[in-house]
Amino acid sequence: MQHSADQAWVDFVRGVSRPETSKNLKTHLAEGCAKCKTANYTWSRVQKFTNEESAYAPPENLVRLVKLGFGRETERHSQTWTLAGLVFDSFTQPLQAGVRSSGALNVWQVIYEAEGLTVDLRFGRRAQSKEVHVVGQVFDKREVRALQNHACVELSTEQEQLIATADVSALGEFHIEFEAKDDLWLSVKAEDRKAVRIPLTNPR
Image (cartoon, rainbow, N blue to C red; front, side, top):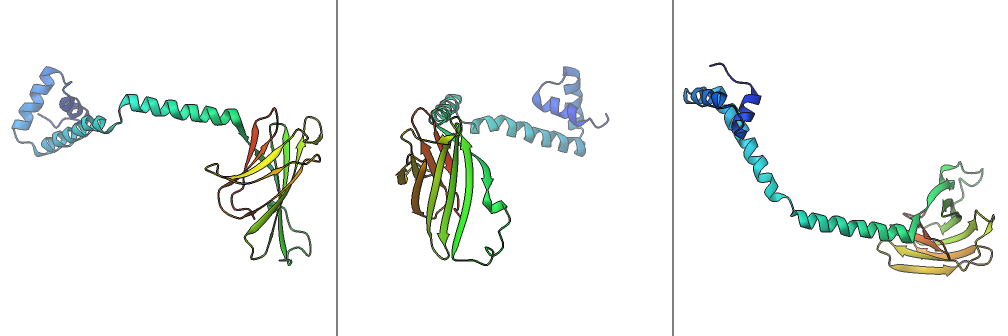
């Protein structure tokens, strides 16, 4: 008997070979063919591994509960806030003449948009200082004016631990100071709108 192809051994170890084929393979193995014994051993190991793999899978009911909980959490967040999109970053713009050599005060401006709002943020930090101050203004794009409906801003960690808060003035302006750190979020909250969240990772 000639050496069989891998597909024949795969079917053999899975027990789905035709009776005649299975009988011939067993006879050939009994004759001591080293190459076919190796093929049979290899595919038998693969079959055993495949059968045992299901034992490491988490229970289906647990997977269903986790997916359900994750879905509810995602839905809860999507119903309460919207992630703002970046539309301008002064860091990507060339510096004006004379500013390149000035190290007294670093200023960084970014503009975000979401929920019909435009949020203009200007970050300032003196050299060698960890303190960052943010002067911002919120515009209502739909009414082409500053946001004026009892808005406020909140600075928090990624785990939603509140660090600072400030009211938005009648001109849509606010000011917050904080110590620079990773993974901070600025949330703009106003009546009849979802909160707008802005990531402040490593304020420059």
